[in-house]
Length: 194
Image (cartoon, rainbow, N blue to C red; front, side):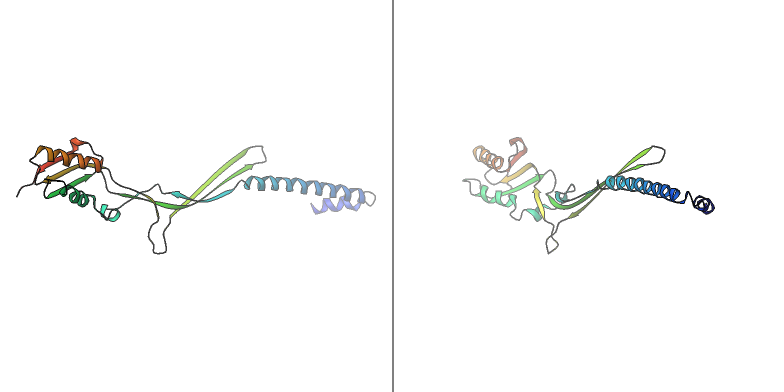
């Protein structure tokens, strides 16, 4: 190849003409290469990065005592005992599930789109997405929560000393229904044994 280039430039009459032609071809080649590289760079610039906070999709199960220090059963017992004629009371509530903490996640997501073209005119588009989620904690490594989902109360069993009286039994059922929101047929009241 070097010999061909030397032959082209050996003719003194055409030397300037050949040199100009060679430079023109070189400039055109550099312009084409630059255009191809800029097209690839612009297509790679479709990269976006998003950082945000999102609620976690995963819920963390915790016991009822962890969430609700003032126990609903104890509070119901205290208030029912204050109703005239009820006497001593014991309350058992059943739940559909335990309480759930919904933590906040720090979300880092990125996506990129790359379009590649080959010399035969074919093209290929590659899309990539990457998401990282980290639970947000305070300085004491405690999870920061968006909300706490308390369990649904499914039923109640109440034993009371005065439950043999129909009016007192009805008052107990009405009070428990008002506090818990459960249907009256899911509240069972029995007379407390000795």
